[in-house]
Image 1: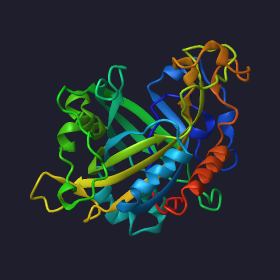
Image 2: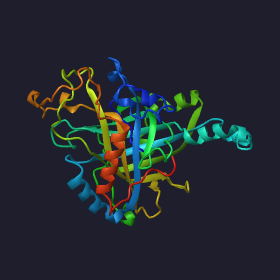
Image 3: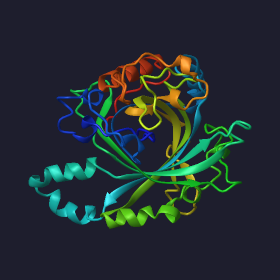
Image 4: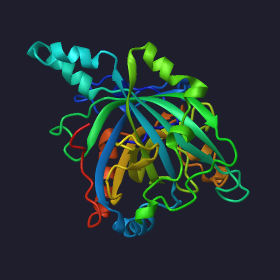
Length: 355
C-alpha cells in the first residue's frame, strides 16, 4: 500500500467524492481551499500507486539506479506497523450476506473498504550529527483508503479517488530504543529476524487508546504487518522555488508528493510459539518496491527551507496558496509511469491487482 501524507493539505472535491472522480479527475487543481485547511490534523486526497517485487540480491543495484536517476537527497528509514481493521459483525453477517445476491454491494464494500491504523517511526535531525543527533517519535494515523478506480479508466496505475488520514498522536521515543542503525536488507539466514519487537516499540495504544476508539465505532484489529526498509522522496530537493506570490506560513501551496518505498514485509510468527516477527517470504528474499503519488501532499518547502533565499522565490502563480495548478491525477500518473520506466530491467512496477 501507499504511504500516507502527513502534510495536512486542504480538502478538495476529488478526494471527497469517489463517485464523481471518474468524470472530473482533475478537480484537485481547481478546488478552492479554506483559510484554515492547512492547519487541520486530517487530510483527504487522491492517491496514485504502483507496486512491484524483486529478489533481495538485486537491491544494491536498484538503490544505485534510484540514487543516480531519481533522487537528490538520501533515503529515510521506513519502519511502519500497519494494523488492518475489520468490522465487529463481519463474521456473523457473512452467513446472510454471502448467500443472497441482494447483498452483493455490501459484501464488496466490506472487502474493499478497510480502516487501517499505521504506527510509523519519524526521525528529525537537529543538525548536530546526522541522524544520531536527531530525535525519534512514533506517529499514529488512522487511514481509510477507498478502492482503486477501474483499470479501464486508469490502466497505468492504481488511482484511489480518496485517501483519508487522521493523525491520532505523535509520541516521542524514549532514549536508548533506537532502531534501524543496520542495513534493513540483510539477507543472511541469521539476520532474517528484526532484532526488535514492533508490538512493543511501535505501540501507541497506551498513549492514545486507539483500540478503544475503533472498538467504539464498530471495528476491531484483524491482522498486522510491518514495512521495514527505505523511503525516497522523488521530488524533494535542497532548494525549491515558491509557487505563491506572497508566501505565508499559514497557507502554503501544496503540490503532488512522490515517494518510492523499498522494503520487506514482516509478520508475527505464524506458529505462535515465539514473539518474533519474521519475513512474510519464508526465506526473507523478497523485497517490495512501492511508488506512490499523493495529490496535494507536498508542502512548498521554500517557506521552511533554510537553503532557499528570498531571491529564489519564483513568479506569482497562486497568491492564496492552495493546490498548485500542475497537481492533477493525470500528471501524477504520468510522473509515476516515467519513474517506473527508469527502473525497468530491475523491477517491473504495475498497478495493484487487488486492494
